[in-house]
Image 1 (cartoon, rainbow, N blue to C red):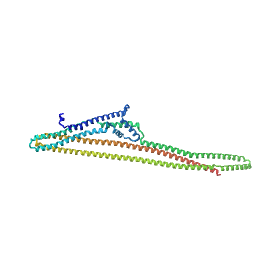
Image 2: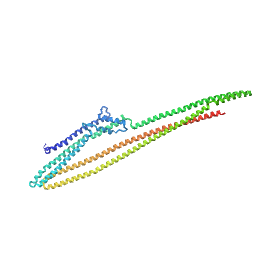
Image 3: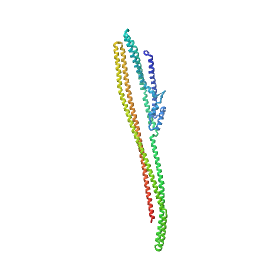
Image 4: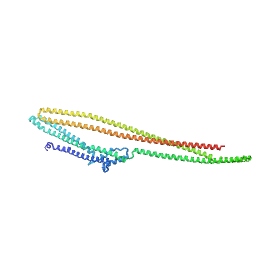
Length: 525
């Protein structure tokens, strides 16, 4: 209590309000946040190990719901973005987790700033009062010099005590909070929480809710359209062949039946005529008479054959066959145009694959741009490393200024031996300032190291996303190539079948022409 009585009440109240109470509040919030994150990590770790008795919290259920909806709608889900967005809404009391974490990380540096502010305020006040008192002591010649100097040094020493007390309390609680933050490291727990959630969602939960991706939907649609086209094409070709060739085949069959019947009749008549001629050989006259009768019969048979419709029917059948062949040629031409359209569609699909290759090249360009950005960031780190020596030069300049003050004190000590106490105090102040300078150097070096680490993490994550995207593009190109090859093979098979049918129709047409010529040659004698 005697030590506290030496300081003003305002100083003690300011230390309690601005240093002690915020430090205790930060420690309380940090401990609560650490407990919450540790609880979430334990729960997710149990879910990863397959413990079905664990009931997921509201946070985990919301993450799972968002991930499930995104898996059905997107080709690639940004798991980290979902987790960060939901984590940013989690609260401890009236404050979010990020606000508490930021406040706990900011307060130690703020306490350092308070301590340094009090130090330099006290030093400035001390130097101004010391200058005024020394000037008054030098001007007054009636009083003894030593007594005047001792009385005048009481107020400067009080101001210096204020400076050192504020710095001491700020540094003390800053060190305590820094150690407490290192003990209750919520940043590490947050990283573990994100890592566990990402592992659980992508490796355990995603296979259960995996839906069709955009690429799968496109491929399935193409397959269904191709199957529908092949089915309709087969039905159309079968119907056309049956309609055209069925009628022609029936007409040819009927014509062949009629021709065979007529030939059978003619053959029977010739047999009858031959038997009649051979039987009438004994009697010439009777033979001539019978020959005349048979000639009349043969003439009647020839007239009957001439009056029959067989040549006309055969000619009509040949004409119908020619028309059918023309119609089939038109169908083949239409089919050729259809195959050309399909080939154009295949060319368009090839152009789409080339566009995908161009997109991949653009992605590579973006990767190169990102690498350039990282190089610029490394240059910034180099510039920061160059700034640190300049800060050291500034610290050295500040030390030289302190040395000049030290020289001034030496001159004052020559005038009054009692100022030795002041000189010792100033030397302690110089040591304290040098210590602050070293602390600032260490803080700047730590910030530089953290920036380099963040750049490396960003580079690794960007390379991972680039590799995944390149793999997806390669898979799409391979699937399109396989489907195009299968479609071309099926089209070739259809064209070969049509060519074979065309050859068969030509064979039937030549057969009909041969039959017509043979019938005409038989009827001409």
